[in-house]
Image (cartoon, rainbow, N blue to C red; front, side):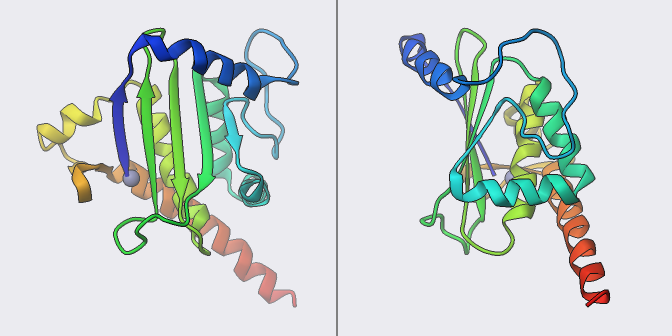
Length: 184
Ligand SMILES: [Zn+2]
Protein backbone atom coordinates (compact mmCIF):
# COMPACT_ATOMS: atom_id res chain seq x y z
CA UNK A 1 0.00 0.00 0.00
CA UNK A 2 1.23 3.39 -0.86
CA UNK A 3 0.17 6.95 -0.15
CA UNK A 4 1.99 9.97 -1.47
CA UNK A 5 1.83 13.61 -0.57
CA UNK A 6 3.76 16.80 -1.06
CA UNK A 7 4.58 19.03 1.86
CA UNK A 8 5.03 22.71 2.37
CA UNK A 9 8.62 23.86 2.81
CA UNK A 10 7.84 25.46 6.18
CA UNK A 11 8.05 22.02 7.76
CA UNK A 12 11.39 21.24 6.25
CA UNK A 13 13.45 22.83 8.99
CA UNK A 14 11.97 20.68 11.74
CA UNK A 15 12.36 17.64 9.54
CA UNK A 16 16.01 18.40 9.03
CA UNK A 17 16.34 18.45 12.80
CA UNK A 18 14.68 15.05 12.85
CA UNK A 19 17.08 13.88 10.19
CA UNK A 20 20.03 15.12 12.18
CA UNK A 21 18.77 13.27 15.23
CA UNK A 22 18.34 10.11 13.21
CA UNK A 23 21.80 10.29 11.73
CA UNK A 24 23.46 11.29 14.97
CA UNK A 25 26.34 9.06 15.89
CA UNK A 26 26.86 7.73 12.41
CA UNK A 27 30.26 8.26 10.85
CA UNK A 28 30.33 11.11 8.36
CA UNK A 29 31.94 10.14 5.11
CA UNK A 30 31.28 10.75 1.45
CA UNK A 31 30.60 8.34 -1.34
CA UNK A 32 29.00 4.96 -1.68
CA UNK A 33 30.16 2.26 0.69
CA UNK A 34 29.65 -1.47 0.67
CA UNK A 35 27.26 -2.92 3.22
CA UNK A 36 28.19 -6.06 5.06
CA UNK A 37 25.60 -8.80 4.85
CA UNK A 38 23.82 -7.79 8.04
CA UNK A 39 24.29 -4.04 8.13
CA UNK A 40 21.35 -1.67 8.14
CA UNK A 41 21.05 0.89 5.38
CA UNK A 42 21.98 4.38 6.54
CA UNK A 43 18.61 5.64 5.37
CA UNK A 44 16.62 3.27 7.64
CA UNK A 45 15.47 4.08 11.15
CA UNK A 46 13.64 1.04 12.56
CA UNK A 47 11.66 0.85 15.78
CA UNK A 48 13.56 -1.19 18.39
CA UNK A 49 11.03 -4.03 18.40
CA UNK A 50 11.53 -4.56 14.65
CA UNK A 51 15.33 -4.59 14.67
CA UNK A 52 15.62 -8.38 15.32
CA UNK A 53 13.20 -9.00 12.44
CA UNK A 54 15.17 -6.79 10.05
CA UNK A 55 18.45 -8.43 11.15
CA UNK A 56 16.95 -11.86 10.50
CA UNK A 57 15.77 -10.77 7.05
CA UNK A 58 19.21 -9.37 6.22
CA UNK A 59 20.87 -12.60 7.33
CA UNK A 60 18.57 -14.87 5.32
CA UNK A 61 17.14 -13.08 2.29
CA UNK A 62 19.32 -12.09 -0.67
CA UNK A 63 16.39 -10.16 -2.14
CA UNK A 64 16.02 -8.10 1.04
CA UNK A 65 19.77 -7.42 1.19
CA UNK A 66 19.61 -6.11 -2.37
CA UNK A 67 16.71 -3.84 -1.42
CA UNK A 68 18.67 -2.51 1.56
CA UNK A 69 21.79 -1.88 -0.53
CA UNK A 70 19.76 0.24 -2.88
CA UNK A 71 18.12 2.12 0.00
CA UNK A 72 21.56 2.73 1.49
CA UNK A 73 22.74 4.37 -1.73
CA UNK A 74 19.83 6.83 -1.82
CA UNK A 75 20.44 10.41 -0.83
CA UNK A 76 17.86 12.69 0.79
CA UNK A 77 15.86 9.70 1.98
CA UNK A 78 14.71 8.69 5.45
CA UNK A 79 12.71 5.49 5.94
CA UNK A 80 10.96 5.21 9.30
CA UNK A 81 9.84 1.64 10.04
CA UNK A 82 7.43 0.93 12.87
CA UNK A 83 4.71 -1.43 14.08
CA UNK A 84 1.17 -0.12 14.03
CA UNK A 85 -1.15 -2.49 15.91
CA UNK A 86 -4.13 -0.41 14.79
CA UNK A 87 -3.82 -1.19 11.08
CA UNK A 88 -7.01 -2.85 9.83
CA UNK A 89 -5.44 -6.25 9.13
CA UNK A 90 -8.47 -7.50 7.24
CA UNK A 91 -7.83 -4.78 4.63
CA UNK A 92 -4.03 -4.52 4.53
CA UNK A 93 -1.00 -5.53 6.60
CA UNK A 94 1.23 -2.55 5.93
CA UNK A 95 1.30 0.86 4.38
CA UNK A 96 3.83 3.50 3.41
CA UNK A 97 3.15 7.19 3.54
CA UNK A 98 5.58 9.07 1.36
CA UNK A 99 6.21 12.77 1.87
CA UNK A 100 8.26 14.78 -0.59
CA UNK A 101 9.71 18.15 0.30
CA UNK A 102 10.73 20.95 -2.01
CA UNK A 103 14.36 20.42 -1.01
CA UNK A 104 14.23 16.96 -2.55
CA UNK A 105 14.05 15.26 0.84
CA UNK A 106 11.78 12.20 0.88
CA UNK A 107 10.52 10.80 4.18
CA UNK A 108 8.70 7.47 4.13
CA UNK A 109 6.69 6.32 7.12
CA UNK A 110 6.38 2.54 6.84
CA UNK A 111 3.84 0.94 9.18
CA UNK A 112 3.43 -2.83 9.53
CA UNK A 113 0.83 -4.77 11.49
CA UNK A 114 1.79 -7.23 14.20
CA UNK A 115 2.02 -10.87 13.16
CA UNK A 116 4.20 -13.63 11.78
CA UNK A 117 4.14 -12.32 8.22
CA UNK A 118 5.98 -9.05 8.88
CA UNK A 119 8.97 -10.01 6.69
CA UNK A 120 6.77 -10.20 3.62
CA UNK A 121 5.21 -6.84 4.28
CA UNK A 122 8.40 -5.02 5.21
CA UNK A 123 9.94 -6.18 1.91
CA UNK A 124 6.74 -5.24 0.07
CA UNK A 125 6.84 -1.70 1.45
CA UNK A 126 10.58 -1.30 0.85
CA UNK A 127 9.93 -2.07 -2.80
CA UNK A 128 7.42 0.79 -2.85
CA UNK A 129 10.16 3.01 -1.42
CA UNK A 130 12.50 1.92 -4.21
CA UNK A 131 9.82 2.60 -6.81
CA UNK A 132 9.45 6.08 -5.34
CA UNK A 133 13.13 6.99 -5.29
CA UNK A 134 13.48 5.69 -8.84
CA UNK A 135 10.92 8.33 -9.79
CA UNK A 136 8.15 5.96 -10.87
CA UNK A 137 4.99 8.02 -11.11
CA UNK A 138 2.70 5.54 -9.40
CA UNK A 139 -0.18 8.01 -9.15
CA UNK A 140 -0.02 8.67 -12.89
CA UNK A 141 0.40 4.99 -13.74
CA UNK A 142 -2.61 4.10 -11.59
CA UNK A 143 -4.64 6.81 -13.29
CA UNK A 144 -3.74 5.40 -16.70
CA UNK A 145 -4.53 1.91 -15.42
CA UNK A 146 -1.04 0.82 -16.43
CA UNK A 147 -0.18 -2.86 -16.17
CA UNK A 148 0.95 -3.84 -12.68
CA UNK A 149 -0.31 -0.68 -10.94
CA UNK A 150 -3.79 -0.31 -9.54
CA UNK A 151 -5.95 1.41 -6.91
CA UNK A 152 -6.57 -0.65 -3.82
CA UNK A 153 -8.60 0.02 -0.67
CA UNK A 154 -9.00 3.63 0.42
CA UNK A 155 -7.62 4.78 -2.95
CA UNK A 156 -4.14 3.59 -2.00
CA UNK A 157 -1.90 2.35 -4.80
CA UNK A 158 -0.76 -1.22 -5.18
CA UNK A 159 1.89 -2.59 -7.57
CA UNK A 160 2.74 -6.07 -8.76
CA UNK A 161 6.42 -5.25 -8.29
CA UNK A 162 5.95 -4.73 -4.53
CA UNK A 163 3.71 -7.78 -4.27
CA UNK A 164 6.33 -9.92 -6.03
CA UNK A 165 9.18 -8.59 -3.84
CA UNK A 166 7.25 -9.40 -0.66
CA UNK A 167 6.53 -12.93 -1.86
CA UNK A 168 10.16 -13.50 -2.89
CA UNK A 169 11.46 -12.51 0.52
CA UNK A 170 8.80 -14.61 2.23
CA UNK A 171 9.77 -17.69 0.22
CA UNK A 172 13.47 -17.14 0.95
CA UNK A 173 12.67 -16.89 4.68
CA UNK A 174 10.47 -19.98 4.55
CA UNK A 175 13.14 -21.98 2.68
CA UNK A 176 15.47 -21.46 5.63
CA UNK A 177 12.71 -22.32 8.10
CA UNK A 178 12.17 -25.61 6.22
CA UNK A 179 15.88 -26.53 6.03
CA UNK A 180 16.17 -25.82 9.78
CA UNK A 181 13.47 -28.41 10.38
CA UNK A 182 15.34 -31.01 8.31
CA UNK A 183 18.36 -30.88 10.60
CA UNK A 184 16.41 -31.19 13.82
ZN1 LIG B 1 1.66 -2.20 -1.61
